[in-house]
Amino acid sequence: MPENTRLPIFERWAARYDQSVRTDQGIFASYDEVLDAVVRAATVAPGMRVLELGIGTGNLAQRFVTLGCEVWGTDFSPAMLAIAREKVPQATLIQMDLTAEWPDALQQRFDRIVLHTSPVRISGDAINAARYADGVVIVVRADETRREVVNRALDVLRSAKGRILGAVLTDRKQTIPGMVYRRI
Image (cartoon, rainbow, N blue to C red; front, top):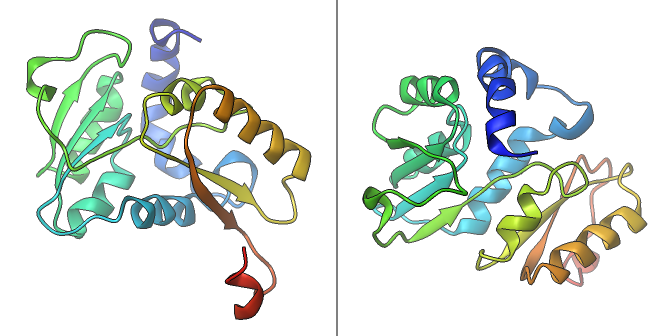
């Protein structure tokens, strides 16, 4: 779906976005766990410059700020950016369409550039971003996501020239023994 047709949807969703991601059902199950995994995968340190593409209401950016990072963020939704501005006033926020020419303010070096997208099976965002990213971390919900679905998502990301860095398994109900965990 082109961003110009998605904008009204995100503008309406902004006011209730944070409430809608606090669920244990559907695509937002384990939302906070996933954001924490993204932060771990980014391996940031205090003082690093982090650019978050599609910052939304700033939930991921808050974690980077807490770790002492200088955060920049982009989003195409003015309503989402307004909420992010309240949550993370220390971040530099820019309204932009990722498919358009990048503004001069972003023509600089960042230590990390992160993009947390919708699932591969729901949106093309992850697939499009994978070809430009240094790496992709896939999130899999334990006891719910079928192996075939994961394999298909990996195939699609690889065909887009995405470099798979690893996976995050969410909603585990059983502890994985250390001996097994080191092998996966």
